[in-house]
Image 1 (cartoon, rainbow, N blue to C red):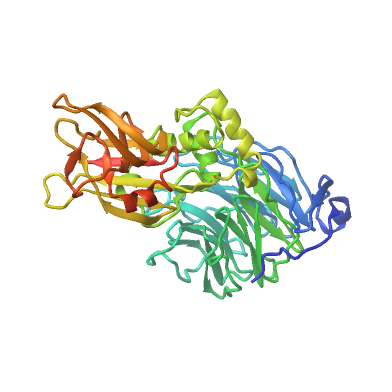
Image 2: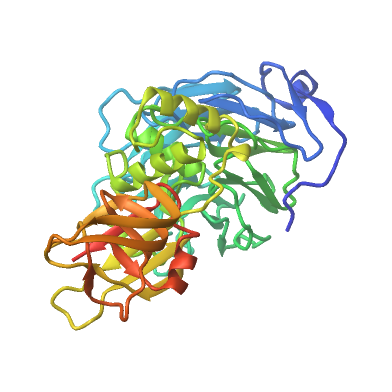
Length: 509
């Protein structure tokens, strides 16, 4: 297993005119600076970066770009947008684009063996054929358990496979079925596939870099055991089938078997995520897409996920929960592209880290700072991790009241807790932590009219005057407070370390 990160001196690589003799048709020449780890700064949204013997092509494409496929001789490539607009480079001919409304967005493209045509595939498995690419069937009319995330063509051009995110395989034409992960429990969803040169096997890749081999596809290693900065979004096999490349959404490149490392596109803006990879002898292309509008809920979610402020990761194939044991109260809030408390808390946390006024709202000022952070993600990752707190009153049950706190998907503390009496109840709902105090004397008037001044510790306010804090009591687990969530001193000292600004607190009845 190798990640292609062996040290080398800083060098300037000429990727263009030097390889024109290797390609079927000249492509535009370009210079790329490669550092000691072989990394280059990726281009902006909707662009393609060339590595090794791959010739550089267009620097600006229609968007959002979602897929790339190389011609069979490696002399060029096609890219497609989510609406099915196709651009060709080198010896790849353009045979047309989609001009009709789509039921589901396009997510990939594959070329025929003689380079005389190509197929486009949608998330519903709908197939669109151009040039000499024949239609052999689709899943467009089926009810799928999971969306289609990729396709691979039979090398002879007489069929193709589609793969869904659960690893279910759909074979059409001369494509044979060699197995799937459709019945398995996967750690992470499948995001792509590649076929062997003889069409007698294929590989599937999951977003964590896990590889599944079927037929005569040999296993050469995976990134499944690595700690990835960003999820894998695609794969490509080497022309001889003795290796493969994996690419992450930040342009990070992982090589296995005889796949040679010629550089990667890490270190650039989160606004231009990698969407796929296409290989040729001695080189490869990485295609980059774009996020949604930066001032929209979806665009904010995509960027905040990339900076570690969400309990989800994002790639051009969509959002994925980072951890498998998320409480249902948290997952039920998630509504991508729509205002939701997960987004509000993430914005609040981002504002706090960057010293801004905190309101959890999308604004011109917040969007400007967020874009600045997204342009240099390695220096602007969330330093605090992700915390979620759940206070359960357990009304109508014999169970005592409790507070459970998760940090980065793991429970860091569960404790008995007290919530508000009926005359001063704790607000029900989900709220972001907006004020943290190590010590405080809480003052006020209780429902009987008596004045109080209670010294408390480890205070995290989440709505109005309601806070999680230590309060000395003879017992815990019942309604005793004036609206706060009271907990013992030991758990309070632990929990306070994790209840950062913007972290969500849910109170259930």
